[in-house]
Length: 142
Image (cartoon, rainbow, N blue to C red; front, side, top):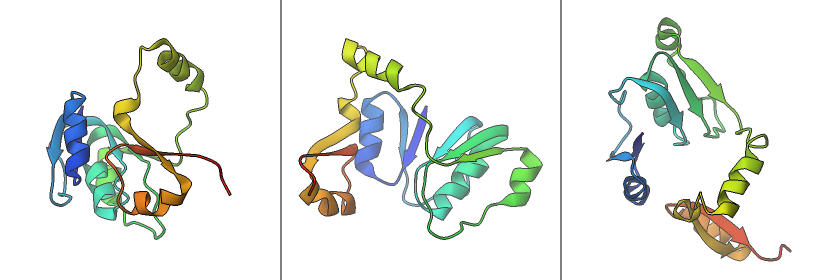
């Protein structure tokens, strides 16, 4: 696994978990691979483009980013290389029971990947300066 990010905390965390991790200042045209699978979670049009063109010919790029404007796609490059582009929310439901069982049995420890818990009152501040892990919010809702 090769993890690439602009956030030093996330890169440090990925390296601690055993990934080859690279800190970048900005998104390059492509990350030298070849990669069968690339994943964009950058929420930045240049990050999406980088993930798309870093997939090997016939590879797959999955984007979990949400864009509120239409990002430009390198259509001709994707067409000529036959990259499959997948987007939308992840479909975890079929896998959730197995993952929960792994957590319950102690075989999988998700704690290095999460941050918190935070109160819902702190959500705006936490989300404006996100921690390295996935923030978890707990407490009573209003």
